[in-house]
Length: 188
Length: 179
Image (cartoon, rainbow over all chains, first blue to last red; front, side):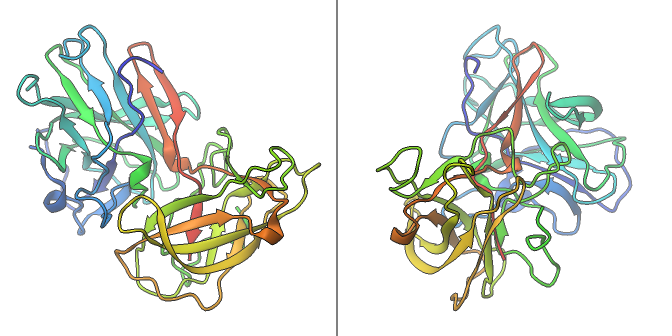
C-alpha cells in the first residue's frame, strides 16, 4: 500500500436527470444533507446512507483517502487518484457525479478543483476506458459534497460495471481528502 | 445466486449489501478471503470462537422474514458441520456494537460457491425505517463445531493510482440481506 493511503474510502453517486445535457461546468460543493440525492432523478448507483449514528451521509470520522496532485502540501511530488466501481441500476445517460470529497486543509491547501471521471471496467485492473469527465469544485465544509455535472456522457447499461474516478489533471497545490466507503454501505 | 435468495419485488429488502458483480457472477467478492465465524470446537483453531456483526439502517418499516448471508464452510471436507445462527440486534446507542437481540434463526451453510446461508425468521419484531440495526452470525453451544467464513461484499471494491496505473483493492463488509 502506498504512502499516504488511508483505508476508508469514497462515497459516490451517479445520477441521471430528465433534462437536456448541459455544457460542462463547475458546481460548488454543498452540504450533503441538503444537496443530494435529488429524488426526481434516476440513481445509477452509489453508497450514500442516512445513518442515525452519523451526521453526514458518509462516515466522516476516520481519515479518508487522499486525492493528491503533484504539488500537494502533504507529500509534494506524490500523486494519488482514487476510484470506486458502480454497477448501473438503470439504462440512461448520467448527468452528474456526487462524491464525498472535501478539502483536507482549506487554509493552507486551498486548491479546490478535482476531476471526476466515469470509466468502463476492466474486471480486475480497475478503470478502463474514459467515458466522460469534468472538473468539480471541492467542498470545504464538513458533510460537503463535490458535484460534477457531466457533459456528453454516453448511456450506461443496466447491470454493467463502471468506475467513478477522482483525479487531478492540473499541476497545483491540490490536496483533497476523500472520506468514507464500506462503513457507509451502499445505496442505489 | 441462489434462486431462493433472489430479491423478489414482493419481498423488498430492509437492508443489505448483496449484489452480483458481472465480472465474477457472484454475489460476494470471491477474490477476498472471508472473515471467520467459528464455534469453540472448530477444526482450524480449536478453543477459539469468532462471531461477526454488520450494521444497517432499515430502508422501510415492517416485519423481516429472513436473513441471507454469504457464509461458507472453511473446510467442507474435514469440517462439515454446517449450521450457523443469524440474528437481528438493536444498535447499542451508536457505540459501534450490537445492542439487544431481537430475533434469531438457524441457517444451513451452503455447499456451493456464490450461494447463501438463509435464516427464516419467526416472530420478529417490526423494524422501523431509518433506525440502525445489526445482523450477527454466531455459533451457539449446539453449533460449537462450526468452522465457516463470511465473505465480503462487492461494494467494498476500490482502486488507487499512485501514478503508475490502477490497482484494485477490496475492503468490503460481510455480505448480508435482510428481507
